[in-house]
Length: 206
Image (cartoon, rainbow, N blue to C red; front, side, top):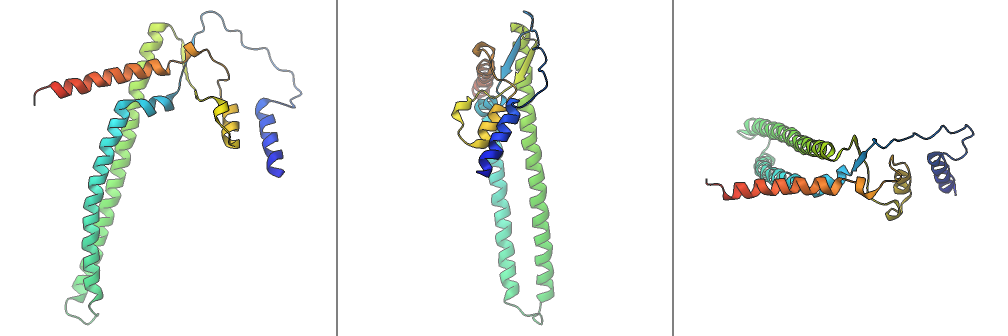
């Protein structure tokens, strides 16, 4: 019951229920105000280049993990050797020092690799975002859009959970004309251009 009251209060706050002050006049859009909308999440999800770049990074990460795995196996073998010895055994101190040194090296290398992969991943997102931004700018200039806003094209009725409902009701865009959603057009252009690049690379001589 308490959760229902909290949810009801949250929905009322979002919808502006219970407000006593007078609402201001709506913004009067003139015929020259043209606003386009784009679902960036959808673009990133379906842009083939973004998918290919991430797959390449995953392959690189998998290869590095194999290298680290072999290093870990070597550490396990060295650790097992040390456990078979006593502190008075000849070479115990040297083996213990070697184990500690190699463990530190492996840990340091793993951390460097993680930072490197995070940097590469962020560069992928940045590269794709800049390409999308450039395409949106070209599209907007060509078709006369003055502003292009991000929005979520998923319909509210497709969400059942309470958090999804509240997030959906909190969207900036409540209504739009389908023709102002330029997501598919931008995606088509991006994928077409990317396919041309892939085809050119595939037919170019080595």
